[in-house]
Each structure stands twice: as structure tokens, then as C-alpha cells.
Image: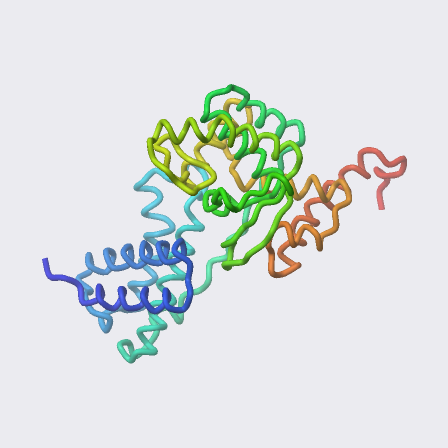
Length: 317
């Protein structure tokens, strides 16, 4: 099989993005997108940059958004992979523009590609009672249960992203001050966050009786705060699966994710009167408009509350 001439170009493009400061997760997503595009082009015997045509990009979009999900059985009546497809198309668009800048393509084949609008479904907001049920699934004394309880409490208390949580080291946690340091948040942002009393107690128990047991099980040393059964740093997919498994135990829908805890924490604080400005700091949002998304949900809840309970809430305009 003839090796594609696109391979070294894609490697160079990835290296340039890395030099520009892109995070490892973004670079991995970029590499996956480029591999998928190169494989698609290879089936059409397109092996050099100059052979890429607009019809190839259009057909690749159809393949990513329609054909591939159906073949892999990913639809189930929904479009669970549409965001992945859109991210891949963004990667392809950037790569093709880069080829044009390098003079390897005369015309950008993505220039006529109409953008696909994706309407994000409403994010799940757990009620405080549902959060309690979720947390109470991890009440056993096994090291894994103690770890899971500490993770769930911290996700909800400090509104952490799962990626931020798994990158925490022991040195990032100060239980005396009830603080946690996020050194590399989204956009490589640093922030110092409070840890609630319930989360602090769960973390204290985990560090005292849970984490040492996981170290013994794995027989390895690590600076990571949260360990897997092998004694090494816990990964994001494992945290995702753990939260979903605990949600099933609690009788909650299967779409409960670590991000649902972050989202729910913010909505619950807003309902109790927290300011959007404080929540912006907690969430690590650079733009206040991003945080304002949460207030729209709260206003919708408020309207429903007025309609239900106000003496004149049901009147017609």
C-alpha cells in the first residue's frame, strides 16, 4: 500500500498547533480527526494535498454525521456523536486552510462548506434530593467506595470539571484551609477554590483510609490525589463510568455525568442567591456571558414557580 503524502503534512500541522500552546487533549482530538480524514481520502485514492476536492469534504461530512453513526449503531433515535463530527470537521477546516497558506492547495475545499447548527440539548440538573441519593451510593468502607464518595462530594462542592479533578495532586489539596488548587484548568487557567465541609470530611476519610489501601493494591507510588485500583492516577473515562454506575445505583437516569454535578451545583447556588460574578470565578469562565447560561435556566424555573404558586400567576395576558 502506497503511503499517503498527507501523513508528514498532518504531523507538521499537529506540531505547529502544539507549538502554539494547544492542550494535549485538543491535540489528541486533532490527531484523531486528521486520521479519520486521511483514511476517508485514502479510500478515494487521494494521497496528496493537491488532490483534495470540495466534494471530498462534503462527502466526508455526510459520512461523519450520517453513515458512520448508523454503521456503528450510535444513533438509537438520537445523535449522540454529532458534537464529535462537528469537532472533526473543524479540524479538517483548519488543516485545509493551513494547506492553502502553505501554497499546497490553490482553493480551500472547505470554503463552500455550510456550517451545521447544533442545538445543545438542555443539560441535566439534579435536584438536591437526587444529589443526596447519588452520594449515598458510596457509603461502604472499601477504599474504592471511600474514593468514589470523595470524588462525588468534590465534584459537587467545588464544581470541578472531570479533567481538572483527575489532574489534582496531593499537594493541590489543603484540608486545613478547605481549599483546592486547580493549576491547569480549561485554557490553562489557574484558580483556587473552596471545598465545602461535607466534601472536606469525605476527602479526609479517603486520605486516611481509602487512598493508602489503593496504593497497597497497586503497589505503586503516585502524587495523584485520586488513584485507580492499580495505584496510578485515575482517568477521565473511569470517573465518567463511575458516576454513571453510581447514578444507576441511585435509580437516576443514565445520562448523569460528572458535568451534571458541576452544573447542578451552580444552579443550586444560584437558587440560594449566589451572584453570577462569584460563580464565574468558581467555574473558571473567562467570559461572564458563558456563566449567564446558568441564570437562564434559573429564570425558567422561577417562571414556572410563579405560574404554579403566585395568586395571579395563571392569568392570561
